[in-house]
Image (cartoon, one colour):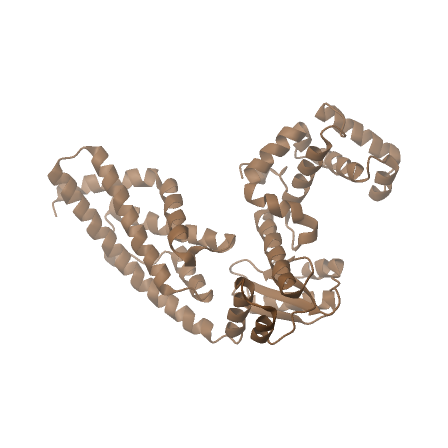
Length: 413
């Protein structure tokens, strides 16, 4: 291949790099649309995006810097995504299909850029042939590594004692036409009573992950007085259900206190439900609560109860819009300082107390005049009484409290 093509290859790589964010979004969206295995929860989806981005960066660097194919290895994010794919019992074929689809989209992008460069037909053909050869060689080499990573993880994961139980529980959760009797037979347990689900998780790289997850299950059992039905989803996540004939009672204060002894351990708990529908619904509640916890890690909340953040769980996927709404409603009452935070808390409790200064003061353990002063101060900042646009104010205050929208690190979400 003529050396004269290399500058054009680098120019194409530079143009793709400049538009990398858009290409990553389009590529990952395409994967989700055409490959069922790629329809993950939010955490695994983030890992999928990181895997895609790391492969694109590696290809661009190879083209721009003339990196030898022999020096190419599987990017760490792509390797971790392959392991997670195996842990979730998703097909290797689906993963490999994504690599080939991604290769095709990348080459289409390169051709679009080449047309815009207005090179001669011979130069364009030679450049495109060079790029296609290099990208195909990269994909072939990375796929070999991905297959090894996936198969090794699959063999390791298949030895886990609860792999079968995990598949059975997923079937009960996901199969709409499954009747109660069949579900009970699959799980070898009664589903006719009450159920309370929890999702237990730890951050990547935590020491003794299996021991930490077991500790979380033990804390949940101690806080309910019941033995939990559990499955290990992967090295960082565990699902648990407390089932009983009567409505489960959770000692949230005890659970929160015990979690503080294991700072890297987190629990999200759903709301109790009955029967097969309740078994599924309480789990969905727990997943939504976990979504809020993941999105608001800056609040350092180890225990997240769906009953306390139900509204926030509906808003968490639209944080930028919710923040814009809260800023419009609250204005300077969104300031991130201790005094303003007290004003927001006071107004929230005052409105919840139906405008009773006495009741609000009792709840806050302060003098009635203190509540009166803080409410009036908040009204000065708002420019109108807190009872005006009351519903919007209450929703905005709740969003601030539960999603931490006033925090600087949360701005721009």
